[in-house]
Image (cartoon, rainbow over all chains, first blue to last red; front, side, top):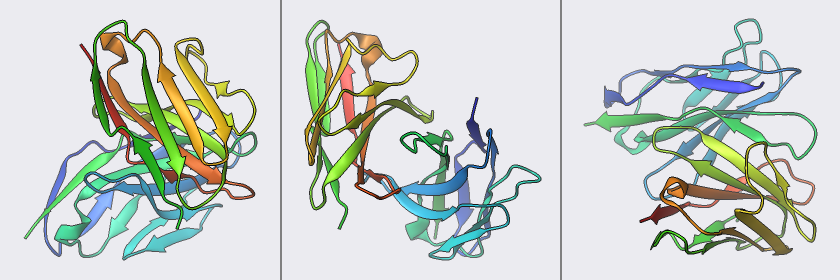
Length: 113
Length: 115
């Protein structure tokens, strides 16, 4: 079935370091891909998305490119800040039906000054 | 806009009792709401999808008689865990989608602990 695999955390970085969180997926058809972020005590928020191959989603300095050939959607940021500390979830949306989301396990990011 | 709340944020109950969790869309009408369950350090797993005024659609392996879902209005869905047992302890998260939209807006979650 459809699934999402993302790198285990926690990821610990110093401020201004480069961030990569790997995400790969398995899906039938052509899913849309998402990154969600969950700050402490809050609900999941959509960070960025891409709906077709080679699309690049970007927001708040984060980027991810939909790579069909490698079935990947890795999240990157060139210079992280302490305020980026959160849990990041990669997800895919299956077309049709109720457009349900399938999530990865989440990766906790801790950024230190 | 697009704020979703959940109540309670945490609950502790005794084994055998029932617990109701509410999910509300505060500033929009949600024709579809989703209920997820999250175990520690694991993915959010979709439990069921509910549309206002109709029966919920449960994912494979989810007991519909144990996890009762009601979506009686466009701003409120409830999840009732009936005859709760310790293995039902988990983090329950809801999301809501407005009519004609694709994006799901998530609530902050409810932590259930069954003693």
